Image 1 (cartoon, rainbow, N blue to C red):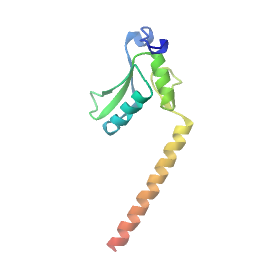
Image 2: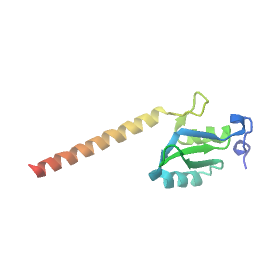
Image 3: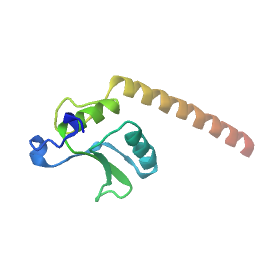
Image 4: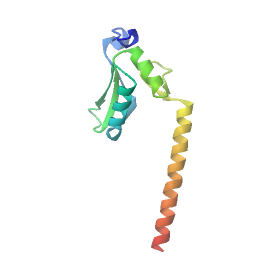
Length: 117
């Protein structure tokens, strides 16, 4: 086990770091598990939020594991309180995806309305 992956008892009073910011929906669990395993993330696990069924939080065993996983996901953690922000590239990617989805749905509506009239 790498030094950075060993539990850091000084981080978060010896408790794991649990993040909603990196969380995801149940429909994405298999994808995130596969990615976690393929990239060798030891000390990263996913747990269902007890207050929001179907939403999974990310749990990291130490600050070093947290830092590595945040970077891997394309996020940044500037406040060091386990909140993660999306990187500039992540925002651009999301914007492109949303615009493409909007155009696709707009075209579907046009076809549907054309069939109804």
